[in-house]
Length: 540
Ligand code: GLN
Image 1: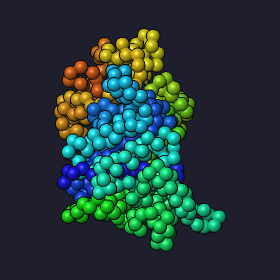
Image 2: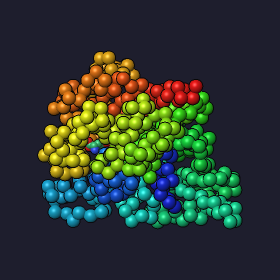
Image 3: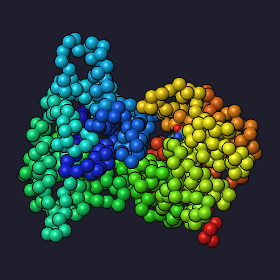
Image 4: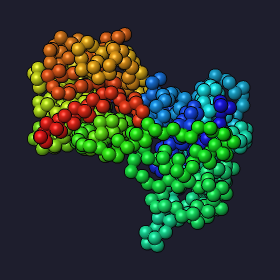
């Protein structure tokens, strides 16, 4: 097809309605009709990227192959579509202004007064069209972060308005996602907030073509007609998005409601293919009919907010489905773990994941948990900081190097088994300066991971500054605790294994960023399998 069509998704009434999931679900349906689709997210905040944001603010920071630190919605896009996203797929106000200010300093504006309109909106429009210009996509879906009516969203809504005018109504669709609240006192669903939100959009000159309504209860036909009338859309363009058991149900819900059809009709696109969701349905069927259930402990310090570990949780869902096992994740705050309570807190678990993280807070609890899993032979999966702590735990408790530590936690430590990478030592600025994105890793012969990946060279995404300190290779590694993967160019240790343990793997990278519904990550698959073995051994 390739006369690229642009679909914009805005949100109203409240935040957190799941624009990302709606965008990803629509993209999935279009992809299932054999179209090429990509999704991008425009975030109105002033941070240049979410890399410097505390996970409590916006949840996990997702990382792409090309090393962009992005909003977690890009994780949903990749998990639904099984396509890689890139730097271009996430734009923030900070990024837009950074670019404009650099141009201004270079003198590119030739003495003009630099203003929100046209300079900021031009920059936004250019970025909104960038992926479409490649000619690779039939559809580019753009999700606008925030809620209409926010001051900071205005330039984005104005940019969409201009693009609709420039590209023509036949090439653009505006989907507005809103909430239909239920008033329990009167037992009614209310449409007024949606009417107001659509009106707010209109005040900015933009009219919605499709209204997607988040709701806890079924919308009656009368209510849908009322919404259509007052929001100025066709009756079939009022789409119900009712609460469902899992986010992976949403594409099917949207198919039932005809979201893809309404969008294609609006754009005059004829699709000969019915959406092929065979594999998706197979996955859902397995997900919903598990034969077993295991308990996995996720140990981290940002556990109060589930979104902080979004990709890990989703990877476990994918791996659980394939193993036909319900993975019950018990999140455990590492700050609450100590020598005394460790056994009590962890004894019912069939596997442990020690999560990524930064800084001293909570690391001693992580080390206690790793000691427990090493000694009690409970499957252990250490991710990034989790791998680094596994090295420290082994050095301290097994090899009796009591001073072993990371220079991240103690810059003057005498036994720095984890240290700042050479390339990081001169770096002062925090934003976008970690070791980021895809790096290759050579899996060593005889390792468990080589069997798991069934490959010798793999590529995984990174986000860290510290590494195993190769000065200590001879002291730490032995015929039990082994290096299993190395970066071929730099010799950095990327994977460690304890081979005298049923399943003990630490990875310096983030496998969770590469698990998708159609391509669950092999390490998560095998880890869950080992948790099932642990469960069976403990129950029979
Ligand atoms: N804080 C550690 C580092 O920077 C680990 C980072 C992480 O877990 N993503 O190396």
